[in-house]
Amino acid sequence: MENKQKLNISRIESLSIIFFILLLIGFSLFKFEAAPHIPIFGAIVALVGFALVKKQTWTFIENGLKSGLKEGLIPIFLFILIGILIGVWMLSGTIPTFIFYGSQILSVDYFLPSVFLVTAVIGTCIGSAFTTSSTVGVAFMALGVAMGFNPAIIAGAIISGAFLGDKMSPLSDTTNIASAICKVDLFDHIRHMLWTTVPALLICLLAFSLIGKPGDLSSVDELSKLPQTLKNAGLTHPLALLPALIMFGLAIKRVPAIFVMMIGILVGTIVAFILQPGISIAQLMDVMQNGYKSSTGEERIDTILSRGGIQSMMWSVSLVLLTLSMGGLIQKLGIIDKMMEMLQDFIESTGKLVLSTVATAIGVNLCIGEQYMSIILTGHAFEKEFEKQNISAKNLSRILEDAGTVINPLIPYGVSGVFMAGVLGVDVLDYLPYAFFCLLSPLLSLFYGFTGISIKKR
Image (cartoon, rainbow, N blue to C red; front, top):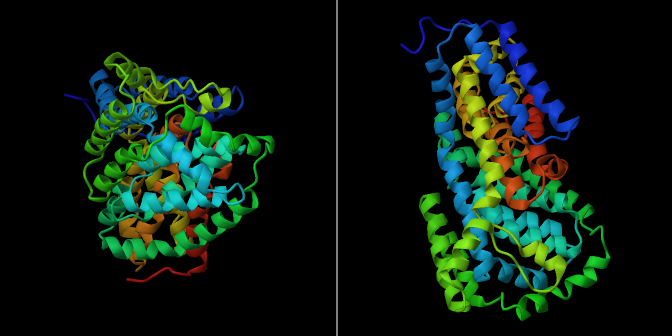
């Protein structure tokens, strides 16, 4: 048998464990500026020790670890595919060509608002913040750095736009999950999210316009060299955009993400051999494994373009493995269930109900680091309470997105946060203050909850 008796965990024990884990991770990140791997490993050791003290078998512990890891197999495989994709698209000229045209179209004065809007539109069209950030996001990142912008601010604009699009897209996994969990029509759910999305969008545009000046003005002059440098290096060609066009087309048709990435890699490889016939199979394999190494002769541009490869994602993969293992144990031990039970005792008004739902979705993100579980667990926990207070379920589905979907990229050890930091090359804690859309969404949900504006009755 997995365990001889049902695990009996008290509220004090649950609170103590959560407090210890968050204190351990927070203290390590802020005080010692450590990578999150070791504190999360320490949390896993502490959870294993607690399970043993509670007389649980090793099989129980292993099943907890495995249940968490099972949730992450697809995201981890996507991480690896995206590492390969970025390397191949650098080699084929796909990303350099985006940068080439972008440097001629986008002005320095409107760069950040443009990045936010373009990533929002693309994210809505394809329904994936990951795909948006790892393709056009990487190109915008390189272009913005060349313009002299703070990388953290560029990353904030990319992530804000990408997650706005992901949240509002009928093609997005999280959008469909939130509506399904709450039994709300998909397009009713999307329309109701406009209450928080539109104000957040307008505030983001204003904020990015106000801070939209490069910090290093000398880089603006250097930007004029960028198109010619890319052209001289043979890295730009209209045909190089073909892999991106095909991939975006497949994503819009809701082709599974893994297959879309594989097609993107395959088409990028074919284009690379067409445009650069001197490439060998060995060079291609090295780029897939270790990433593309630029040699334009311009040090700053080479630094920007040298990216991708499986190895570039291993830091992220190892962190996700540890985070999901920790989350699996937390769930298996019943800690999340006990915390939700405690929060439900607090509910007595619409405002407090919304506050409890927001806090739970954010709390699950903090404890487990996984946005799908923050939507699913929170949705199931509060569904009956929304019904009891005669509040429409589309209010719950909106909150799940505002405090679940868009919060995950702000967690340094969350699946989305790890991914964005790895792909964009900016630490989560650096870009967090500039991810305005992600910060505003839960605040707007709370505002509506306590004022009653947009809170629809059944």
